[in-house]
Each structure stands twice: as structure tokens, then as C-alpha cells.
Image (cartoon, rainbow, N blue to C red; front, side, top):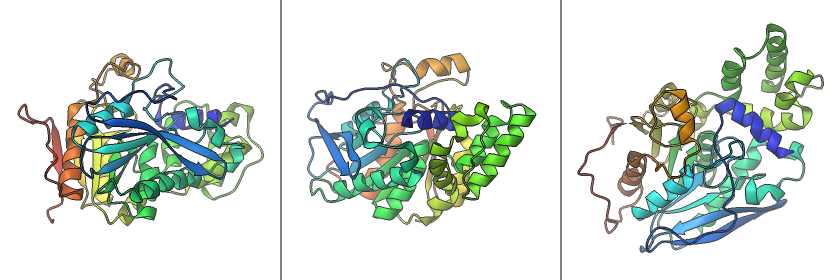
Length: 351
């Protein structure tokens, strides 16, 4: 049911990566405590993992996964092996004294039972889930601040949730600037015959206007079947480049230069829309936060390699942003950067 919706989202932004970790293992970071956590919604629980370093009132981040049936660790049921990108990100941040919560989105992995009917789930439902997580963290006196981190599609979810909850900061990783319907058009045009393209354009235009479509060609059912249309209508309503302008907290935009799913131009457009945001371009980082060249076969190998670490500069740039812009806790020791950094930071000329 809802898995088909996630397969559509994979078409929009590309494949992401596989599953599980339903039981919480012991923390792999010395001194860090890993526990199972959840939020309760009217249709069921949304489950996640909380990783807290041994530190007095550390800052905490909420990590929101990207598109597709992507679990809390950054793994998707679409691919046969995991990459653990978000798990590795959380563990890396813990080494810098930053706590985290990452979760299985509604309808995914341990949170699968929180979806009853596909037609009842909208994009706003996922935003509401993220906002509940933020509010739960804001009410926890153990944490000094709450930063929202959104990856890929999770970037837009995070932008809106951060605004709704007045989070302390927001970080976008590989987040599109354009609305999803435009991304979908770009990806479908070269794949569809002219007659199917015309049908797709007819349906897309109606959905963008908030209208459902009863007549859907069988070849396009996986994309536009009636039960999925409420989600698409709600999703297409948002333009990330406009939503990010509403944020008043510190914002960091991170983009890898070898991301073959979300190009650098999307991050540049977000920066243009939010001039006071910091923009970090990380050389050689792909969509799953791993070091990779642009060559497709080598790219795909990283999507299924949990032993490959995330790019260190990603963890460094986020931790530097949080400790310098969000928290004034100078007791947090940061890893030596003696080897130099391979990313560029673009800041507004003002404070």
C-alpha cells in the first residue's frame, strides 16, 4: 500500500537504500547511550533511535530521512543492501558531543503500522510527525538546543517542521529548491513516449491546481493512482525555496559536488532564497553522504556499502555550525582538524 507511494518518491529523487534495525543495538560510540524512542499519533507509534553522548546538556538534532521507503538509518527497502548513512551521521555527531534522534517515517520499517489507508496520508502528515518529534525534544531538559536536519525530501519536511516548532536551527542536506512536480517533470520527460507524456502533463497540471484525476492510464497508475493523489496534491503545494525564506533561526545548507540525484544548482538556489544561510559545498560527496566520483557504477556501489564511512567534512561542518551558531557550550571538545577541510563555506557578509 504505502510502499507504492514511497516507490513513486524514489522516482522523483532517485533510489536511496535498505532496511531494518528494528531492535536497538548497543551504542558504538564510547560513552554514548543508544535507546529506543517513539512518538504516539492517532494512527499508531512512530519509532526511532536516540543517541546521547556523555555530556552535560548537549545540543540535540532530529534527523529526517530522505525519499523512498527510507528507514532511520538511511536505508531503503528498494535496494538489497544497506549503507547506514544516517546512522553513521548520528554516530559521527555524537563524537562531537551532539545528541540525535533519527526515526522510521510513517509507513516504513518499525513505523509501518502507523499507516492504515494510503489515501489518508498527505505530505502534511509527515510534517506533523516531524513537528511532534521536535516538540518532544524541546520538552526534554537534558538538551540545550534542538536543531532539525533534513536529508533530500526530508529537507522540505524539516524546513516546515522547524518553522512550525520554532526550532533553534535547521540544516538541509541535499535538499531540492524546486517543488516536487517540477522535479518529476524533468525526470519523466525523457522516459515517456509523447502520448504518455501528454497524459502525465494533464494529470500533473490538475494535481498542481489541487484537483484529483479519475482517469489515469494503466501505464501511469503507479505514479498517479487515486489513492496517492492526496499526498501529491499536498506535496506539490510547497516550494522549498519559498518555505526556507520563512525561517528565522540559523540555517546551514550542505551539498555534495558528486550528488547525481540532487545537483549543486538546487543548493545554490536555496542559498539565493535564504542569503543569510551558510552554504557548504563538500567536494566528492554523493547523495548518500559517501565519498564517490561521478561515474555511475562507482556511485551505486556506495549506496550498498555500510562499511564506507560518511564524508568526515559533513560531520565537521554540521558540528561546527551547531557549536558556533546554536550553542555557546565551549566545554564540548571538537576533533582536531589538522589535516584540513575539503569544503567551502559561503556566508552572508553580515552577522
